[in-house]
Length: 119
Image (tube, rainbow, N blue to C red; front, top):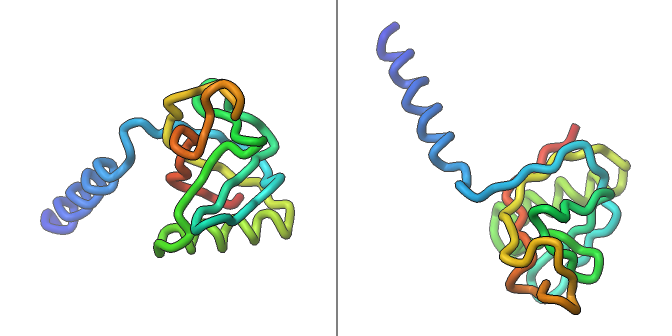
């Protein structure tokens, strides 16, 4: 019994330590646009998280579609877009929050998607 509790504790700590330190959260949104270009997907949600993200031609997050994680995000986001499902997203904090493509938001400063949950 003690070994099961210890294992669960270690697994919980490992999962928590794997979360990005600079992650931001936006909940209860829908996917308005999903674009794939040059191996990356760019996402627009129904709400612009201006405090933590920048606006690259109305797209707020990107992710690499060539990775296993990116393929999973793409699948989940396509399902959400198709069905109109509400989602929660976790993303990196942009180095140009609140900016747009004319004032400092670019492919290097746009937030990176770090997690998605369909509701």
